[in-house]
Length: 352
Image (cartoon, rainbow, N blue to C red; front, side, top):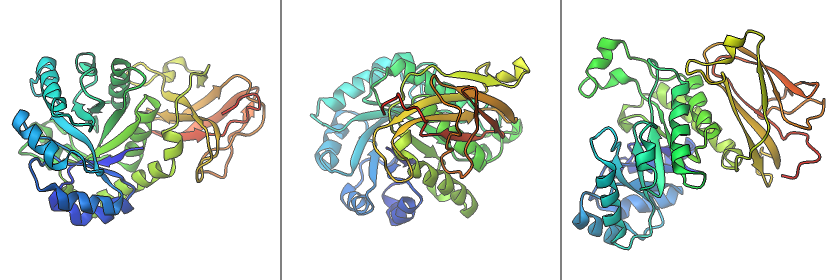
């Protein structure tokens, strides 16, 4: 499973051991037309793969493919950044993808959208679709999950989809975002916010994840510690997060006060999916799991039910405290932005 970090290129290759230790296995760079051999060699040593731009136009594409296109450390070509925000129409993006494929490259083509709404126009073009949406602190956190969901619907069930999580403060870059300070858009995401967005990516159909901090050199020790905590958490749970999502009847009960069932977007406050792990790997045992995220900044009392769940406590991954089950309902309390993973579910009739 891809756990990636933006803004890491040849000039940061000395930091690759630190990046790997933090839980990342993939990096992205905006640098094009570099001498890639030393960087790829350093990546290979750390078991890290790279997503790089192929340049601009057929001549650059041919040169990039000739120089870097067969290296095992190259994971994908980063064709264009946010074409929907750059007045880069789908027709032009499709033409550029065709020109890159005409070189004979076998490396997948990826690009990132800045919003999920235009995904229907762009999703057919790349081999890997990405989406970045940065809501902290001025928009509902749940809107990140909505952008991933929109892209999953547009891309269909099979195409890889990587959500890109905000890991920067809008006011860090006044030259690029001059209105941020004026609008009061400030604040690096907290660890709870980073974790909620990261896991929401997988609830909504993401198959991999990146974190964007605009500039690798801008990470303070405190911010790096926060990012590392979330990345390592994802790496521990990668066997579950990368497992297929299976359809399941899933009943959800959230408090007796019906308006509190909803988040700011009108969706259920708790977003959930069912994952099926085929083989035990590390702390993740084989079986079915429920992955649940509280998308609100308020505590929620909840119940979740899947058919056939017996009245016996259900393990909570990463916790010594199981969740009680009463009349088939998992009963629990969700603090603001909490993430819970229940399982393996004691369903003797189900075969993982």
